[in-house]
Amino acid sequence: MIGLALALQIAGAALPVPTFIVVRDGSITSSVPVTINGGEPSVRADVLMKAMKGILVTGTNLHYTLALPRARLDLIDGIPFAKRDTLTIPLTRAPQVRGGQLYLPFQFVNEIIPRYGGGYYYDVAQGELRTISQAPLARAPASLPGAPTKPPARVLDSPAAAAQAPPVRAPAPSKPAQRQLVVIDAGHGGPDNGMTGPIGSPAWFVEKDVTLAVAKKLATVLRARGVDVLMTRTTDTLIALADRGKLANSNHGDVFISIHVNAPGYNTAKAAREHGFETYFLAEAKTEDERRVQDMENESVKFETGANAGKGDPLSFIITDMAQNEHLRESSDLAQTIQNGLIEVHPGPNRGVQQANFAVLRGSYMPAVLIEIGFGSNQSEATYLSDDANQRALARNIAGSVIAYLAHYESRIGGTR
Ligand SMILES: [Zn+2]
Image (cartoon, rainbow, N blue to C red; front, side):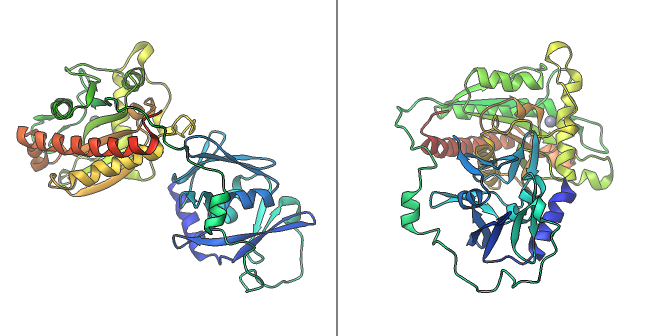
């Protein structure tokens, strides 16, 4: 998946982008303007669908479907993934709603639809998207589509166009304020120690103890600030990964926060120097480092037995139902808010927001993140994370971010789920 995404980006950068493309289906042609949105070439989804004899279906919760004659591609506003059936397709940029219209990155024209759209071919030289039966045609040279032959048919971003467009986001219904529930998940527990460290020292740092200590402090701060808290565990016990999410769902949590401590994938002096904090949200892991953390945290499954044991190979993961995971963008926002907050208290470095497929986040149908609060494999960071005052500072900071996020999230969706 890394190779594919990279190839698409390189291809996208090198290709000429026309001012409009032609969609050719037999003898019928339609032109679709290419507009620049945020400095990037884009096409309007409804105009492209009309030209391709398809339909843009507007769903709920920012979901859209490009219903083409022979394929359906599911999208979410602001999420850089498309989905066809159970296949998740990484995008170089997210589809975006602007002025009430959904715009697709140009990558849809030259890569996504030719590859996944069910029988289309993009002719780069002609700027033509054709049904596959036209693809092998040998044609006479024609003028390049980039030439200024005619202006785009419509001014897409005009206020009038926006005013005529159907509302895309549901208006926020008014609802009396209600207490919010934050589900806090202290990673690991019981026979599952999580990581132990530091590297090269007697292992005195045990992840499950530190995650529980920080989780309890986070709960205390949130409760003191008027937020309800549910903890997946309050003692040194093992809760199946799948059950942590279920617990959150059955209690109608507003957000799910899993706390963990990081460790590098190999034990060397260099690895012992790794340090810093990162926050994950649920998506397919994209880099080797993200995959390492994902595999490490999903290892807990091996401690689970019986009906609650996790099923399947975490490595073979594809987002199986993006529709269920309608909180992907909220999760990403929450992860960013937490990560930005931690900069204030954590010695760092800031390792950024990451994405990976964690079994613990998978089962929670609410915005969900996993925070790696530092590396227990690093002597000085293990010391930092074990300190009571530092744990309180981290907990206060994370609580502040969660509360800020909840206020923002509530104002956006009106408290409904
Ligand atoms: Zn962990």
